[in-house]
Length: 243
Image 1 (cartoon, rainbow, N blue to C red):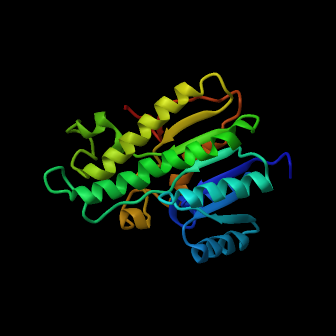
Image 2: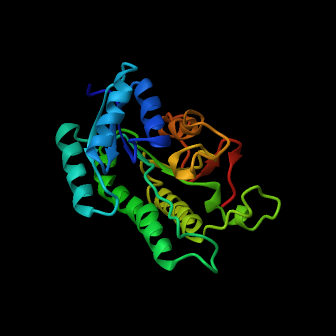
């Protein structure tokens, strides 16, 4: 048990998060499913159990700093460290849209969860990540967070004008860049990973990829060995994504 890596995956009760949890468990990692809803987390754990995979859950809400602090206490008491943090939890909002029409309150809700919440969780977990031999932080980003992609008329995502969501992922990328620089003299690496356009509840089950396919790259970066360790990168399945 002590030699197994410990991973927290936020928003892991369904979609890409659950698939990331599954693939990490298959790789022999002790997985903690972070979720707002205890019943949905229990369903996710039961789902994994049907495949002979064990996981535990804890309550964590990116907009509730008390729940984040409680999650830190639970992980600290049970494990004493955290080897892998996958910042997967995120939202979209029906009132989001192009800059001319998006509801400002929708943009605020998205930013509060996708960026500020991710920042809060990462800050809270850093002391536990520092206690791991070589911790890994994976921030789930999106090609929609790339300023280059947003300004490229030839990009398939050029018309995906969701100012709140796209800006939130650009902000997550800024977190990746600055945190990687701040941690450059440690064994903690942090990267932004775009899973691709995946068929999940978040996308209305539109997309080009299954959750299983979308989870592979985040899992790869969560499991980076010391020899393969890179930090401060923005990647997708086809390679490096332009900022």
